Image 1 (cartoon, rainbow, N blue to C red):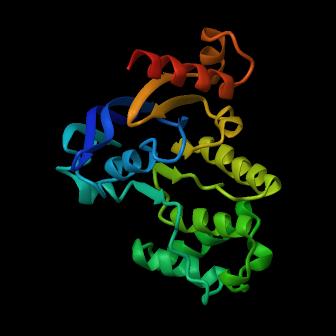
Image 2 (image 1 turned 180 degrees about the vertical axis):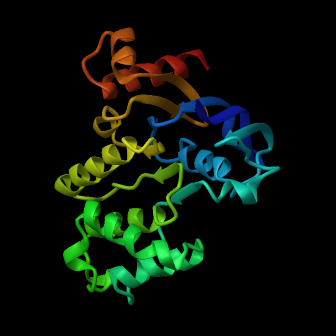
Image 3 (image 1 turned 120 degrees about the vertical axis):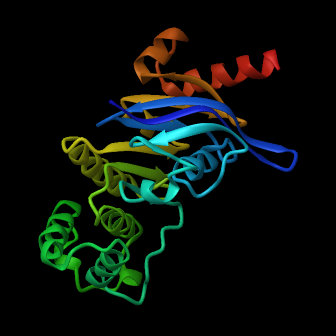
Length: 244
């Protein structure tokens, strides 16, 4: 089942084309990495697919919902964790999660079990009474993810969630994501870390709003006869620049 689909998706900001005729499909239960440097168009793509921005051209569907025509009902099945996820530092871990449970209208009778599960697999159970402002960077990201998952979404959009997070916390964060895949949650994950992108089932290499390659990391490395995705990305970008 195709969970995320974009056809000719384009977004212009005056004379700047942030996303240019992007075609993309992501399957159910897949973690797909949208990979590129700052300013490549990763965040704009995510904001288009989550119904926050309206495309200038093209169309998209997420979990069978049109991103423009059905943008409100789309939100029932998705979660979007932006680079600056809105945690309230003066609230405790538990209070933050309960706040988002209220926002997403999670039924009271189901809430306690869901929260205990989220705190358990994120490793936050011993810290549920700690103020969010007193958490480490990695723990804040885990709390942000827990808040995003409170309404049990089918599709998860993560915009550079481990940016600035220490390596141990990044490893823990990825373990949580792999556990989510077992529940057939589809994950679109943006990152500028090429080593991190190697963990994704497939990746889309984006540069100046153009999706240059879309395949498994191994296939991309084989195509360009290199050992790392970083080496492949450099060659792909250089090839693109030479042709344009």
